[in-house]
Image (cartoon, rainbow, N blue to C red):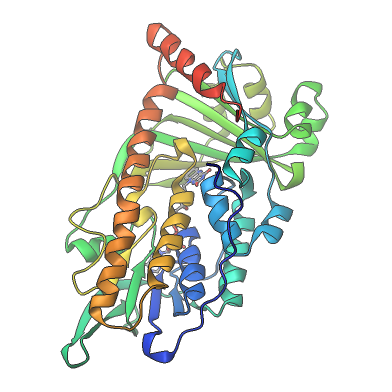
Length: 413
Ligand code: FAD
């Protein structure tokens, strides 16, 4: 059965005896999403962010129907539909320019009940921030959390956690949620030891083009006039592009073997080096890259799983998003999973009847049960996608193309 349109969640009224004070560490997409969902559940939220101001580094982001369902249920359809582009097709193209398959996104949206949206990250980020603040979130920037301590109030059968910051400030809450991204300190605190993310062997060049330049070229203007998501896939590399902001900007991500020096995870990239990597590809790619002025280089890392659990035994501390399950961006799902985590956590906290440890434990156990299997599956599918996208020409590539044609032929019927 088609899931239909999502219901918009109304803010729950609750009395003080069951209202949790929640601290969220990190105002990224996951942290802000969790703030909205937890506020809608009727609790108080204070977000601690290490950056001096809220802004999103990076360029485009694709939101698949599972994550736009979450955004719409938070009352953000009207706001985000002004900022999003809704691409018509997703094309799989061989590295020399041969089209392998396509998927009709608009048909697929009818099945899902919610759209595919492509955003500039800043628009997604600011929309979430505004909604969180409108619902009552308190935000403190320039505040880095370096430790979490636990307090057991046995008399009241309750626990709390204290987020300790670099400057020694201590924030006490009934629940601390670590949403501090792939290089998570919160994950390390939960585990009690260092646990760096794993290298994947790939990096991403990320760039934005001004579409005015593209419109002057008859071959490139089609990319702007008819918004589609394009994946060129080839030996050891692939390239993804789509338009943003109603066709004003063109987002490109180019995925290649990692040659970054140890320790540096983001750097300014060298445009000439990037162009050289794609000089023999479909001529439209070198043509697009000729318009590029500057590029950023991101090392791609993952976090396949988190054992034994996502939450501390006190039930006063949990984590979400990339801190728990960072994935390769090859299914365009990392941010979507962070938003879903926050959504589910909020729904679980909406059920609690008092602030007791037992109630929080139940809520956190359901949260993890709903999220662990799915997120681990997406991380492992992302790894599989790395292999599939980067296969060299030959029998395996032919099998891969056959499979893509079978998958891409889905037309919503
Ligand atoms: P983050 O966005 O990293 O936010 C963490 C926040 O915590 C930051 O604001 C940081 O400043 C703050 N912080 C860190 N440490 C502390 C601390 N100790 N104290 C306080 N604050 C702290 N996903 C998609 O769904 N679709 C896509 O199309 C897509 N494309 C991608 C393309 C690329 C090239 C890459 C690299 C990723 C892509 N992703 C995509 C994945 C997506 O960007 C991430 O999964 C998502 O941003 C994770 O959100 P998060 O909130 O968990 O972490």
